[in-house]
Image 1 (cartoon, rainbow, N blue to C red):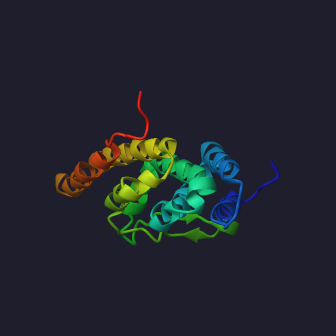
Image 2 (image 1 turned 90 degrees about the horizontal axis):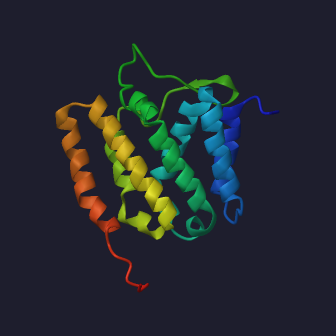
Length: 185
């Protein structure tokens, strides 16, 4: 209620999320999701910042198992839910019609991810074999969000740009179909 600069608040939350020894992952995750749901003016900035979190494959070990996994779950949900923003970032290649993001303190920024193969990068990160080190409930959100991103890419892209995405999915999903043999029924 007292926060006036939600982009700044998102930055602080993400700094707290990756802080070594932080025990507040679930609270940070809930705050990030609530901000995205309630404050549409900060969604693009949140997606921009969360992309760095999802595309950082060094977060799957150590601290991620304990506190960061909830934040990664929220990050995957946000990127999947607001994948139209991923589209805007991906399509921002023309300086005559740029996609501006409202950053902290009211500054307008352009995405550091623009012009890259962001759909493919996201699918590769979300469906990486390393994500099997995360809890199953987080893996479920990763898979669900990857399907939302794939569908968005199909709606926005040309047929030639979809083939690499299909290959990522084809080769990545079988890892998640492995049967857990530690428990017998």
